[in-house]
Length: 525
Image (cartoon, rainbow, N blue to C red; front, side, top):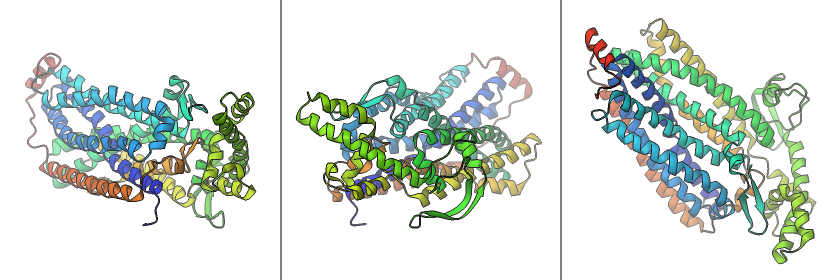
């Protein structure tokens, strides 16, 4: 550990802060829409129990939201402190969605979160319901811009490298915003957040049912969570398939590594349910495969091959050799910007320029690289196969588990059987699983992109700041202590208020409910 370089330490630090932050984000996404659904029922029916349910779950939402803001703000500062060259290289592009996130989504959701908590006695029912829906939409809008930025790193469309400024420059904002990878990542990520919120409500409601307390509240919350969760869990699986299909188009090495597929198989390739990737022997041992499944899912065809790792490494060698032409042209243009031949050579080979930069990890001067150095650089494009292989499978298994969990919950809530203690215990023990799946999903997405900070454009080892390892160690330790303290506080507050419960929920007489429902759209609460 003492020998870790600043870039590796910076990667560990960013992974730590990002994964801590994403403990709070999915619950915010999921609870925000569940609050909107519950309050909508209150406005339509006038039954006070739904208002009190909204307030109770809103209290837990507020705790989680505050922690998410506290852990999220610090992440962006790392682009300047730890990833200075990355910020310089892509700042014109990467900064745009981050700025739009702050100007639109963050201010929107922050403003209306305040109105949600302090507007119950100041706004009409319809007015407060509008605020709650705006909180939900604001939370999701924030995710849109963040995922547009992240998707651009996975698939850098709408941009081009300028050899005169030595930076990536935006050529089409519309292409960057409507990046197909961004669309797939957004719907997949927010659906995972909805699953997290639904499991959270289902688990805590099951705890109340096991204790025999606040039964009216628990049964209604259980029913809402089961229906919302079932739709969300199905969406996660379907939209995850779309993400995999797009990765097959843009990140073939990630797919091959996730499958431990060293050799190219005849189309359509089989899917390994289990196996043991051996990176030294370059084979996956003890693989149990479902014939044709991978090819059908990843290519949606029966005749399109999925290249294996070895074939992709050979292709990377070709791209490195092509990139060396662009690299040489850039060096000539820096000496003479008017060199027309160099500019023309760069234009022809510009798409492979990033691959030539991989040689900087192997030799001091890429233009002096021999065949052995090029081969070594090509193998840098292979991420760790074993971690990706198993992370992906655990994530997928959890996705199907959630469908089963919510399917059973929806059945019990439909037939109004809330006395199945075995299932209530199962739901309670399932509470941490959505976070496990979400963190594994981000691990697969980000670790699978290595060695690139920007896919095919900028290697990670060239992206860091010129700082000493000791400074990164200091900030890493500080973040670890600070974020752990926040996590302990969040769990303490969540447990405290969940144990305290919703309190005595009012159930007005039927006549009062009808009168309340008639006035719901105009009368302040």
